[in-house]
Length: 337
Image (cartoon, rainbow, N blue to C red; front, side, top):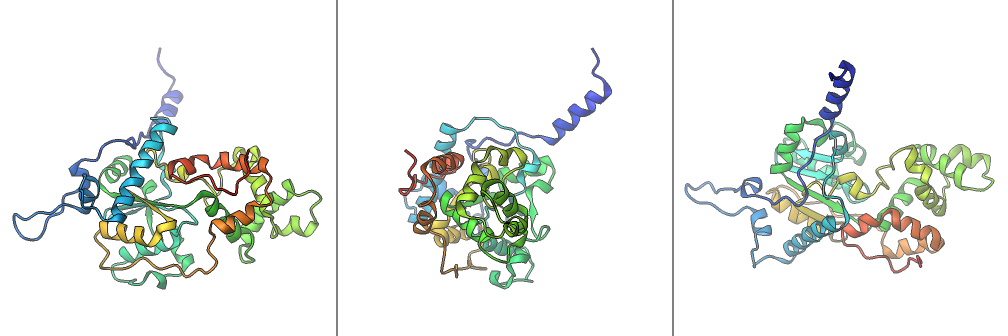
């Protein structure tokens, strides 16, 4: 029986918009790693990635840590996720591409992503920028300053996924969440977030809210934010905002084979390792953090102190995959039993 013309068009559209990414546990070949050669004829050396992942016994501690994280991630993916999924190019908007240095970076908000974007802008500026911190933070987040993997065709996407150095930086999930809350709901300048999310959170989760709070949305309490996150209506209506979306939903670490999994907790040595692997460590340094009130475990514990065990458990279940995939322990301050 012949398929109606409209049905054929719909099927072609669906097939054109989806593609299967290389599975996370696909092995890396020498071609994918790219063997670099010295300028001297007949003289070759191993690429940094080959040294890192081909069983070399003389690894430095930062390299051993990176290798161990990648292995733990692979094991967690095999244990806790389905083996096959289908992604569309639309799912790759957080993967920034640097064709000049063969890099792919999946940015995660509240995990030093502003400075990583600044670094990539320096690398692609052809000398316009030399100091990452000279780039204003708001300029680093302007759409169009850096290309994302979603902008390429499917063959171009697959070619880059096979051959580029892919890296991601992650953070303890609840410290990242508290950091996002503090930045978006306790700072007076974030009026867009107050209007967009704060008014909705107060309307739904505050008994007898005052008119001013409903109008401005600028005094959201942390317990109200938690209730909003675990409310089934929240994800039914729209995807979570990128600042509190789960890392595994932003970066798909069980489908995309990240070569380096850096951590916010060891940001400086991990960043140096990435720049060294990319061969640009002599061009620039990763900026040091100047924040004096960085969100850490002690601060997160203070925020969670007044969250009931019921909501703590629901929130932990929401972020459970990030804890599992990136080898973060359940925080001691949680009262989920």
